[in-house]
Length: 360
Ligand SMILES: Cc1cc2nc3c(=O)[nH]c(=O)nc-3n(C[C@H](O)[C@H](O)[C@H](O)COP(=O)(O)O)c2cc1C
Image 1 (cartoon, protein in one colour):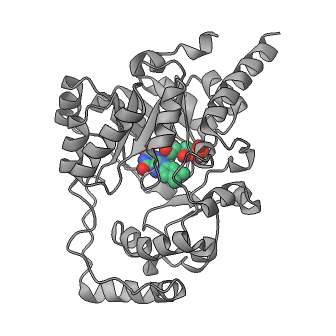
Image 2 (cartoon, protein in one colour):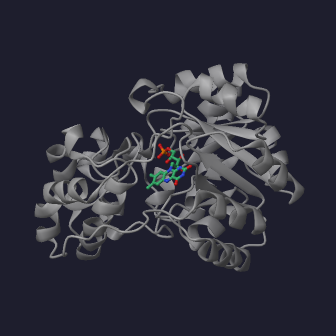
């Protein structure tokens, strides 16, 4: 079928225009390799990974698949002033979260020296690991990063939530652009305006980005079955990035409780919240998203992410959904498949059927 041969499949050197979305903190070697081995582009999120772990992850991925895969990095948002959270402010933020620490029996943490690995060191380690694709969120990679990646044979991908971000990425020299609509699960990766002012749906965003940029466009957000894939291709996308539907498969690193939530009754009314990380992200509503709504109670990113991470880890281990970040996109109620290979096969069959039906 001709839909399988696009500018993106040629750029990534893969058989199918289907990309597994990276999951910062929740990617798994098995899921990434399964998607790559099935002919798509498996991606792996490196959020929070130290350089040594990045090298080790790339090595494990290479052991699990001989096919191309992508690595993903969060850039610091340009112009965003690093949060000044002194000891008193830190203690106040901990106080807000104290009931959650108590509920899961975790001692509230003391202030760390750093919250995240150095982004420049992460990028260097990712380039040295020589993945087929290196994708970025929250900004435009510098020209020196893009040039060095290219010298290592790496395709560079940026991520846009608005047309103006896509234009900035195109001007910055990336090789392809993920256009991610407001339906997507996880963080809104806006970098030119506040994410609250960058909420464009996939159906509106994709064709506008296709018209505005010269490089291949990868549609993301709210696509969980073959109808969505066919629709995005029809809008002019060169590939489709799927997150939530893969997160729900048994190969994913999501906990059983998270996977259950993706299929549960509340998956149909996901919310955008800053409660967990200090940045806006979409997930299934629960006690934390409904209680922590006052922005003054949220520490700035990455402090809030680090702080809540301590009780979220314990809640995940104990299976307490009310205190977990249950990231999920708006099309989660369409999720049927429990196996990532099965999902890839079903997507292909179903896109073939859609185009055959439309062509007849
Ligand atoms: C749990 C979770 C974590 C995510 N982490 C990242 C990330 O670190 N980097 C990134 O580029 N996208 C991230 N995303 C977005 C996905 O890669 C993908 O673009 C998105 O899920 C697509 O929308 P969908 O969920 O409607 O399929 C994440 C999504 C989820 C659900």
